[in-house]
Image 1 (spheres, rainbow, N blue to C red):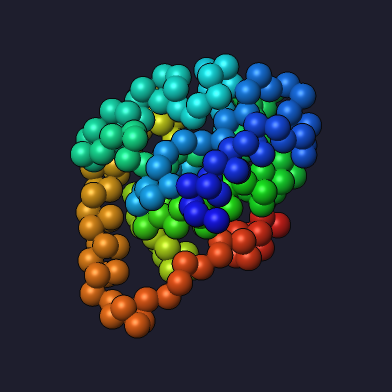
Image 2: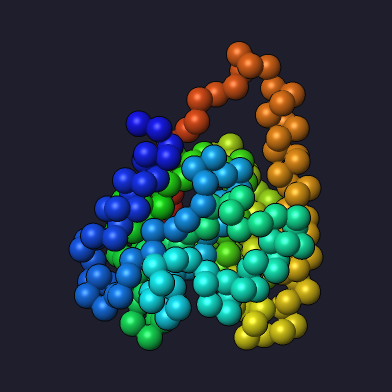
Length: 215
């Protein structure tokens, strides 16, 4: 099955999902969107009010700001894949619960990562950062790329954090402006690697699922 077919199947399954209690309060599940060939994948926390109504990620105030941040990096929304840790809006936008995170990431997010195989994953906020860098503090490591299972993970603040706390806005803008540098670094490393030494895309299931117990 091609990456495009896999992403489409995951989206269809997500919209009909009833694996946790969040489905009872949703208007629409939000599978995520973007090309299956995206080199950059951005992972937020979960849908808010506007996302729940439209079934699309980052379409409210945070989404408008995210579009501005992408433009600062010389990117447009249609070039990246945008998803969330959980696919349904929690009641009153509360924090997602560990069991909700585990169900949603195991069945959907990690499969999306495996299918797309992005060169760079940008985590937006502490919940998505915790999938790859458990125990870290986002204010300490934001904008500092880390290698996890051979993939470049760039932890960043969530756009909503900059909207609610304006002093964080310059930090997030500066981190996004370095995104082309991080992507170029990965692409240079891939190009320099002999074809015979290039590994096949690695499944994302094992390591993140082990990390889930740390929530």
